[in-house]
Image (cartoon, rainbow, N blue to C red; front, side):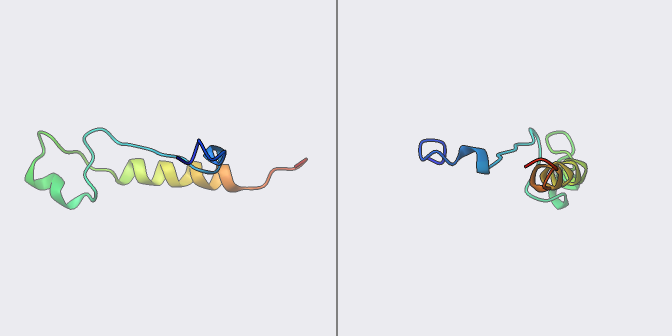
Length: 57
C-alpha cells in the first residue's frame, strides 16, 4: 500500500531470519532463535545514514 501510494522511498522494512522481537527469549530456544541486538544497532546506523542530509541536496 505504501509503494502503491508513491511513498515507498520514505520507508524501509527489515526482517531478521531467526530473530525474536527481543533478545530475552533467545535463552529459551537457542536452536531456533538468535540475538538481534547486533542487527538492531546496524539497522539504526543505516537509518541514521539514510536520514542524514547530504551536501548538494
